[in-house]
Image (cartoon, rainbow, N blue to C red; front, side):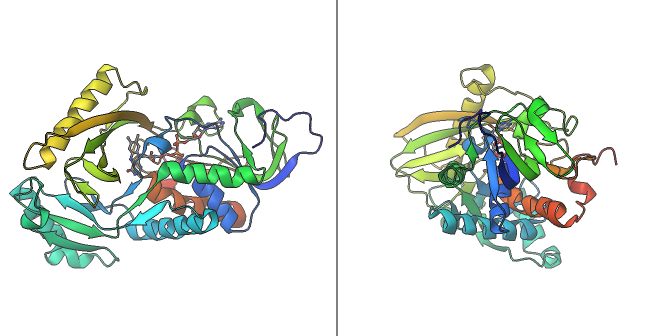
Length: 374
Ligand SMILES: Cc1cc2nc3c(=O)[nH]c(=O)nc-3n(C[C@H](O)[C@H](O)[C@H](O)COP(=O)(O)OP(=O)(O)OC[C@H]3O[C@@H](n4cnc5c(N)ncnc54)[C@H](O)[C@@H]3O)c2cc1C
């Protein structure tokens, strides 16, 4: 790993792409760059409570009360599946698991709405690869599921912490990881031919900023329209439970290890701190415990609430990502606004950004960070 301030060196380290920020956004840019044969360096200050380390990494095709298909699911899923498999091969680490996810209906109306959208004639409008299957109450025995539920496939989970750690280790071994917090307002210097990060003695053809909420500490892309949303999760020990799949209801339960589960996630607009013992943290805990109880038919005696974790999602004002190139410096781009869907969306967005950098293929307006102005 490089030391943060390497200013004694005379010749800068030259790479094709420098990525600033090593969360899900930055790691996708790193791997897409590597896959295209570029030399890539990562500048990232490791933060245990970053959104990418607290996230469950779920990729869920059908979400919300209306059972809508996640926006452009097939396009984004296929990019995610391909990139994460490439990362697994490159790092020899298991970070990506694909398996059906289940969802429990909470009312007869929900079941009817689902059937109308996914089983009835309306379902013929969908031509993608998603498979859904209705489940009866007895298929979901042990859960409180009098109206049954459904399974969806493909669904997946990215082990986010393992992924970002594997990325850092991969680059660290090659001398291309800079574990430093850089003040981009002052050290990022665009010139006609290249971009430089002073202090780190790094020089690149392209620089990508993937800073999550910390993008607000510099003005390279003006004020990104971020609407942060805090999320809390709870790790649970439940010795008598045997849950094999990710299960959704008004929250989700993820198998997390022997007799352990991750329960999540709350969604609170505006709180920007992650304290657990705060009024927001205590409220979130009570909400999560209530959800856990709601999942099951019978109360369980042996449940223990092990650890609560919280972070703040870099969500955008309209839930679409915020990406694109700088208006003057076309070799400087940003990838942000991933909200609740970083695992699904980051790989495809990284492709689009590299297409813009390499081939000048413009980014469509619905994804651009400045879409409110153009
Ligand atoms: C409770 C919770 C549950 C979630 N569950 C899911 C889920 O199931 N599925 C899903 O897809 N998403 C989930 N998310 C959302 C997901 O976490 C985000 O979409 C994603 O992590 C955002 O990644 P990011 O890279 O944009 O930002 P971040 O994770 O914030 O990463 C930014 C990184 O950049 C670094 N950085 C910033 N500025 C600098 C600088 N100047 N110098 C050096 N380093 C810098 C930071 O230190 C950090 O490491 C969840 C989020 C929360 C909070």
